[in-house]
Amino acid sequence: MISLRSVRFSYDSAEEPTLKNLNLEIHEGEYLAIVGPNACGKTTLLKHLNGLLVPGEGEVWVDDLTTKDPRSAGRIRQRVGLVFQNPDSQIVGMTVEEDLAFGPGNLGFSPEKIRKKIDEVLHLLGIEKLAPRAPHTLSGGEKRLLAIGGVLAMEPAYIALDEPTSSLDPRERKRVLAILKALHGMGMAVVHITHDMDEIVDAERVVVMLRGSILCQGSPAQVFSTGEELARSGLEIPKVMELIRRLRECGVAIRPDIFRAEDACRELLPLLNGREPRRFRQGEG
Amino acid sequence: MGLDDMVTLGHYLAGDSCLHKLDPRVKVGSVFVLSILVLFADGFTRVLLSGLFAVVLLLSGLSVGRLVETMRPLFYLLLLLFVLHQIAAEGEPLPPFTRDLPLITYEGLATGTRVVWQFLLIGCMGTLLLLTTSPTELICGIERLLRPLGSLGVPSHDVALMISIALRFVPLLVQESGRVKEAQLARGSDLRGGAFLRKTRATYWLMLPLVVNLLRRSEELALAIEARGYSRGPRTYLKELKLFPRDFKALGVLGLFVAVWAARMFLQD
Image 1 (cartoon, rainbow over the protein chains, first blue to last red):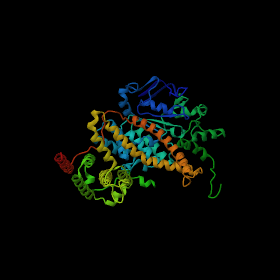
Image 2 (image 1 turned 120 degrees about the horizontal axis):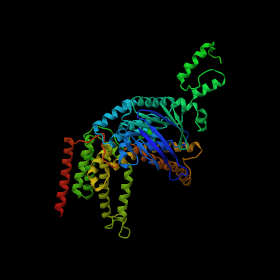
Image 3 (image 1 turned 90 degrees about the vertical axis):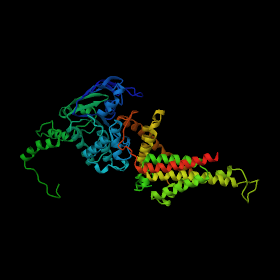
């Protein structure tokens, strides 16, 4: 478990602290989404998870290790993998394979074990063919996968990603989200930072941040039900939920707590079938 | 320059010759030792070393044309070196020059030729190393050779990582400068042609965003490297190097040349 206890953090140049008395627990194997508008402290929080930043006040514990102790830094970084927003600033190897070997090499794995880890990660991400390629020849989505792979090769128990789908096309985005789901399925704890509400409908728990503290948290349904509060923090509710809300405003009798497309479909179909659906012919309407 | 030109990092040409297969440590070490020999050798040893280089070039399966092509930027430096020696040297002037205007002297020609020969030979050996060794192997070799110096405070892992990052970021910078250039063309700036002053200004506006980006990126990179567990401590690599009989043979040849050189030095004294 990663636990942040009364964490307060300010950057040297800032007047107001970036994180204010923040308490949060991240459990093993959980899928946690952290949402919030830009500059609400999400990335700063992320950097606290593996000791890149140490809180000014309060403490961060990773299992039985505190990030305050510099001697635990290596072990903490192995347990908590961070994937930053810009993959180009985290890839150091001259080929995909070499980059994947960087983390395990830092941990002192034997060459055989590094080889094994690389092959596992390449297979898991489905990028075996890219192994000998130079990073600058990869597409944006492939670079993102490589950045994730570089962290996975270190066998972390927790993986935290900062807007892992930003500037990806829809197909690449789907692929990244599917991989996060798969990692969660394998028992890894996933911390997914985003401001796209449509991406977090599958999360087990959602934390909404605003100006350096936690505004509210709970299951996606609980968080989305506080629609007004979300709006106050500058976030939008998922598109499906927006549709349901407007249908309800028009007098359609439908449950308000629907935010997945599948659920909406299931709820709406009987309503549609009850009436005679208008059939469109080609070229009409 | 197209981006495809940058796909091959450095000058490396993949191949299957015995020079390609040689252990990078042996290659880097040999180039280092031979360069020292070339600098301090007498004429006879220098001729021998030139012969050795010719044989090695033949073994590498690379053409002289390829070598000359790769080394072209070096030629200007060599020319400059030669000219400087003509200006600096004193001695018997070569007709039609007189003692009043000794622009070209016998001594100048002699030392100029010797120095250019030395640097050409070192340049050729270095280029051949780069042409036959992949950057990965090269870094691996340098790192292993530096490792014993760790106790003297030489951070071999840091050096290796530094070279690796530098090589990784060259193509990235080329891509980025292309983007900056396009963005400025799109906003109506004219980067082509024009007077010197305008060109300088245009270059300034091109460099400014590049440098700013680079600084920001280096900060992010440092953080990411830290996050991925890089530290001062011992680390391991995917590829561990192993010496084969051919490497010992190569070292034997190198030893022979060192012996010849040492013997000549000894006899001269």
